[in-house]
Length: 302
Image 1: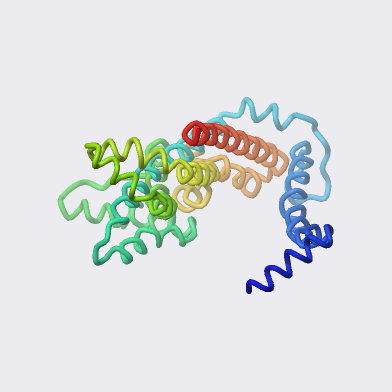
Image 2: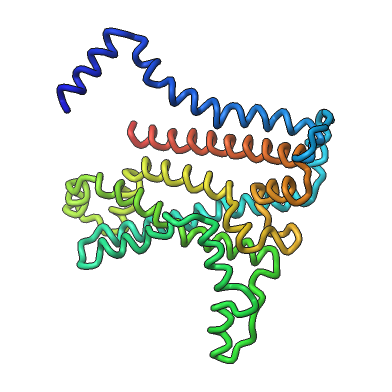
């Protein structure tokens, strides 16, 4: 293996075109499945295409002007912010708590890590359908439990904001295991000598956590926050499977609204415009968050 790696480095250094040839398949795939669809989406967003007909015409910025005054878009945007930032906050708290607990050695540690991480391996749509049969009004498991105690059934998903909050909590619980794994890796990379030195100097557990653990977990925080916020802002499967955006448009995310506009209302051009807005917003948030967290890491390392 060592010899083959040396041969590969020698080949690449002797022929500068080698690196280009090695990266060419990845570049082709990126252009085919990312760049081309984005350009196509931008083009469609300036049309009145219904998604099926061969005939359509360009309408300029009409779709974008309509989006600014469309209340369903702003409801979906508000919900997207709750899904993204709310889920990230809860996942970060739960993931860090589980990581610190499961870094300690005990008999069922590996089994506990597996159980907590397992939902992160399941498709979001499947998790949504499982929880749908738990919280649904008729024959829902949660209402059946309430009935055993003589409590009246509750239509949990009938109110828009309550449905949004429930979906946010379900997403956080289901995917906190992913955050936990990131933090476990970060905690295991912290040398014990720092904590031991702080303990000798008289620092208590909270002081060690605040002044040593948290600063040294900044790279893990960066990775976790970026992944969780992007995942939350793209929320789709849970919304579609649990409420399909209802009641009305009250629980839609931008992603589920795009799906509804395209396939439900046959407004492909308008849904493409909403999709472009969602894409730009997620990129903007990602760039701001990365810049802020990198500055924090630089301040700490400096």
